[in-house]
Length: 152
Length: 195
Image (cartoon, rainbow over all chains, first blue to last red; front, side):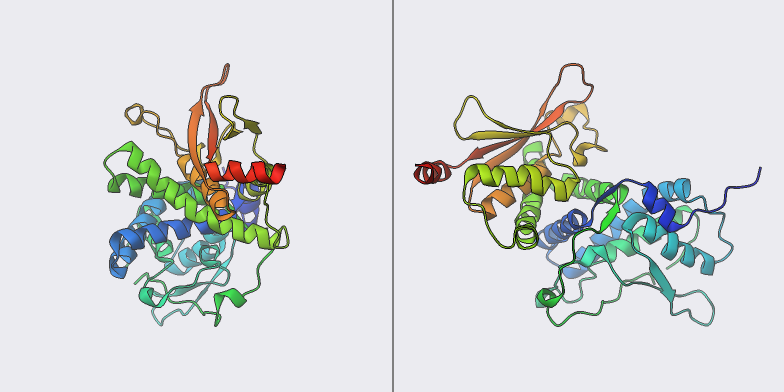
C-alpha cells in the first residue's frame, strides 16, 4: 500500500485546534519568570528551560509523526528542513528557514522570523546571557533523540 | 551545538507595533507548555496548597498583562469602573481572547453579597490534565483563577479568586467554577457610585 503523501505544514496547522498565541506567550513568560525567581542563576535557568523543552520534545515527536505523515528523512539536511517547515508550522504556526549550512552539511541554523514565544519580551540587563527560547532547542533535541538522531 | 542565538532587538520593545492578536498556536503546543509548568512546580513544593498558590501566581502575572493589552487594543484605553462592568469584561472579552469563546456562565453568589462565579464546563487548561486521587481537590484551574485575579487587581478591584470543581448531574467530568470574592473596599466604592 503506498504511503500517503506528506502533508504540508499549513494543512496540518489548519486541521488542529488552536489557542490564542498571546495566552501561549504570556504563559511562557510566566514560566521563565518563575524560573528566574527560583533559580536566580541565568545558566541554571537555561539548563532548566532546555530540560523542560526536552521533556516536551520526547512527547511532541509522537504527535508530529502521527499527524505529519512524513517518510523517513534520508539525511540531516532533510531532517532540518522538515523541522523548520512542517514542525514549527504545525505547532507554533510560523515557518522557519534553514540557513548557515557548514561545509560538511552537519551543522545549520534554523531561523524564526516571527517567534510567538518572544512577543512583548524585553530582557533586562541583569539577564543578559539568558537564552530565552532555550526551550525550543530542548524540544528539538528531545524529538530528534526519539527518532535516533543523536547530535550535540 | 543546539543553541539559541540572540534575536535582533528593536531599540525599545515598546516601539514595536502591536499586532491584531489574531495569531494562533496549536492547542497541543500550549498543552505541552502548561503541563511542563505544572510538573516543574510539583517538584518545587511539598503540598497541594503551595502548588495551587504557585500556579495562581503564575496566572496573576498573565492576567495583569492581559488587562493592559486588551484595554489598549480593544477598548481604546478606557477602563471599567463598575463591578458589573469589569465582571462582564472578564466573562466575555478576556475569555474570548484567551480561550476563543465567552465563559459559560456568570452568576452572583446567593449566600454572600461579595461573591460571583464564572463557570466553565471544560476549562482549556484542564482538558488534558487528569488529577491522581491522592491529590484530592487540586485544580489546575488555579492558573485561570490567577489570571482572573490579575485582571481584577490591575483594574482596581482587588479580590480573592479560587477555582473549584463542581460535579454536575449526568456529566462525567465536573464543571469548573471560578469563585470571585471581592474585597470590602470594592463593595463600599460600588455602593458609593451606585447611589
